[in-house]
Image (cartoon, rainbow, N blue to C red; front, side, top):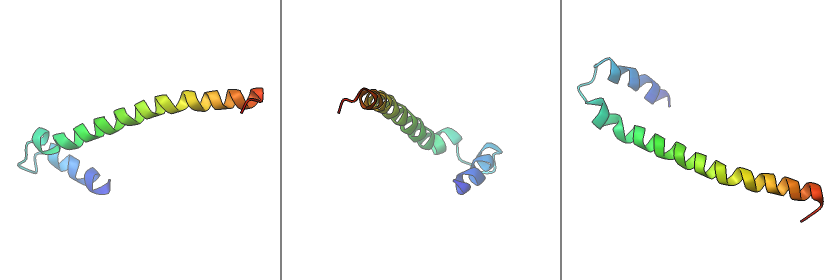
Length: 61
């Protein structure tokens, strides 16, 4: 993370000759895919946890 935090400003200030979209695009894409997967997993986990709490409160299970 520290290396990325140091390198990103250098990319945007044109200190490197790389095109930022083709050079950093895969990193951005991977970040979006990771966040989307985490949100989908969280959406599936939260109702199950809520159902477990309700069942425990009602004495079921």
